[in-house]
Image (cartoon, rainbow, N blue to C red; front, side, top):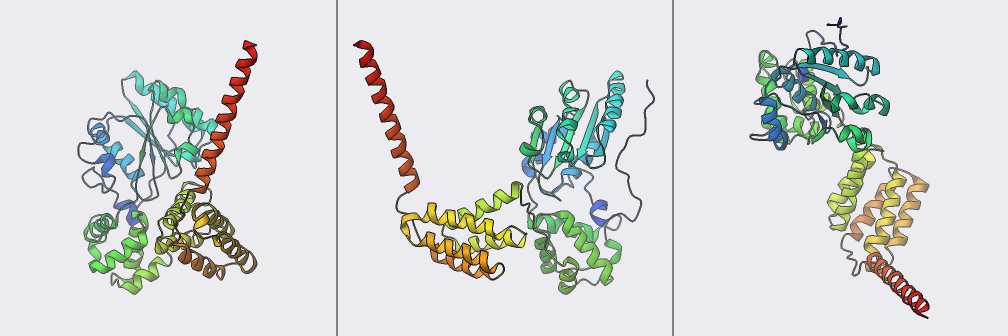
Length: 375
């Protein structure tokens, strides 16, 4: 058996580790959330319990349990589990892992390779995995916060199962916080902290579906206040809510779509929320203004003939005076348009007429051609 070099695995830091790392669930019973994936009698749960996991990609927002579930698999499996981060590894490390996996295969032992932030690898690096995932030399588990359809090669995706992780609910985060506050071995139980339900709820809301953020706030608030946590201490520890958003990625399109659907549904409050969320997260105001102009033209249309010129006026206001003053113009437009119903779908009607014209022209052409051939 060839000499095995030390694998470049993320170093485990000594105590004191962050609370979020210490409180990682060790078993599936402790794992909260993702019931659609690892709930009772789900296929992936049974695969983990029987040590028969396939190659797969975990995709979801930060703090939803992707790395934690991979670590639980590591505890359950009898295979050689190797963990690396795509941030500080490359083809050289992959070659060493493949050599190690081939040695394991000689003694009938499986090798599971977990790549955190797999979207950080280039297409060339990802292609290096293909033959070994294909022939079963390694079982790949990749974790990513980016859409795999954009960031993972299609050839690699075809060899893996993609599991989508959802943001944790407020109730699930509260359970995690309470567990951390009471746990004397891994959590903050020795500090004797006491929080009201309202204070737990505030931390969970600030966490916004991210358990790591919520636990970090709880830890900082407990240590900074000596265990005497109040609402003021929580807000000071949190400083600012970090909105999950990326200007060129999946969440960008999700939120602009939510804005459009809110306006179509005549829900002014929801429309203002999504508008404010995009701008607060750093979106280009002129991009949002252009989408509102589009909405005025296509969705409101003939129901309010002045909607388009009002939208263009709001766009010009944004261009001339900038933010945050332009926000007032947009708020007025959204609230005025919420009751505007387009009586006819002008675009769809126009498209149908265009298709009818083309089909009629094609039929006439074929008839004329046939008559000429007969003559």
